[in-house]
Length: 200
Image (tube, rainbow, N blue to C red; front, side, top):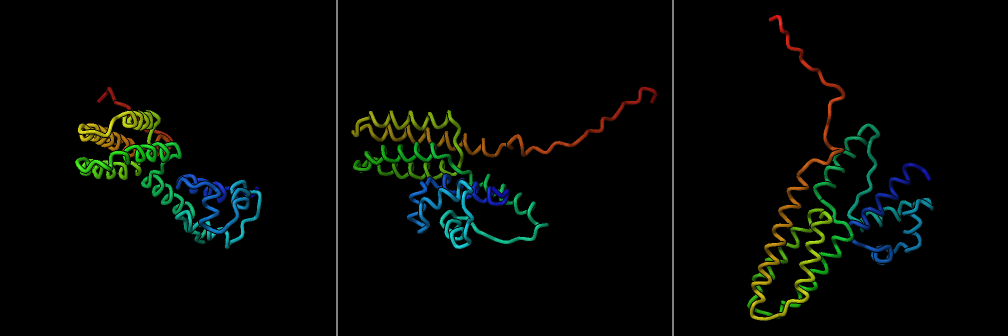
């Protein structure tokens, strides 16, 4: 497989997974057959420009020709944008979706409408950050606790507890994403150590 084609294939697959789309769902969205998408992601076919454009648009990507000298600058900007977008893993998307479904049980309770709206807002914010396995566990535990809770007069208290957990998770995830990734830390190739002169 050609190195350039391999990069494009990986980029398409990563973008599809980031959006939580299956190959079949992407095929339905673009009109490109699912088998062809599978072959593109494997790098097993020559990618037609028309298919590349359709897939890119569906995945919020843009195909652009740039001067070779600008490639490293564009890649740097793209990596920075990726970190800002903080893509969720498929597991995180599933857990957050599950929690939304459980919360939907409480929507009948007019008394809890304010809490539900706040929880929806917290979930939207949380989707902007990558979640660590321990944070995913907390989302899963919250879903399970809510699933066993009864929709009753104390629903507001339960939903407030969920909202507090989600806000805590959002804050943890936001602070974690602000920390530099080990590979992003720039280290000098060498250091100059000043020698102290004892004779001075």
